[in-house]
Length: 386
Ligand SMILES: [Zn+2]
Image: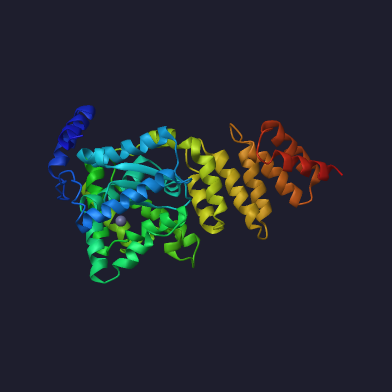
């Protein structure tokens, strides 16, 4: 969509002159370039595009590619709202990996990981990350990166990165291949904020993304930040980014958060993404994340269940009691998830409270007779009754 038309639509929608006024004084000066033409295949940039086309074909076939058409259409719409005239060139791929990450290749392949969707709280926060990635794309940072690597005679190594087999390895490598310079990251943050503002999103949400990630990182203290997210692999450091983005928000106020649309499109995946998160085995980070997500509307029961699972799996002194408290809260939520009773049963089983364990596990099987672990739970019940 043409950005003037988009602005006019926004101004008409809220019937306020303020939007137009604010637009006229956008303090971040950026002119969105024309659509990028496919480079000559004989050029270094053309070669890079061809390489990325191949990666994109692999990604489409990957078992980690999330095939859900409705969710992908939603994510594509967010990218298009930010990308404007570049929309036809941007292709969103959702990858099932419980890590906070996004990357955009020069050919227009935009990867979003499910760990990112679990962590952002609304559409504006998602737009902050997508806008940042589109910023790299519009400025063709990957070409600078390619030439920089080649100047350092490490080009063979760079190409070698793409020869690796194995979907996850390859995805992580792809992300690291586009580890940009500090200046590129700053520029992408600035353009991302500009695109958010232009698309009518609340720019203040951009700095909140980094604030939330920092909290998670602090909870898992001593951990390598890069291990937590490839997005931490690049400078500037998260606190600097968070502050720069907060300044942009002050200069470009207003806009929408898009809470309802985000929840409506992602809620049905929450259980699956939370399961993936718990399986990472990074308990301190998961606890920080789950405690923050507790505020997510209509999801408290499910989040209590998974936080209970984290405590139960960590198994430090007092953890079983904490797990039990979370499972009980879940069981008392308006629409209690069946797993709440599974959790109560398993925690009581470990605590040697057999009567309570059997009662809760029976309830679980009554609510979820076709659960994948129904057979296992039935054998527990038999043992506990002996
Ligand atoms: Zn970046």
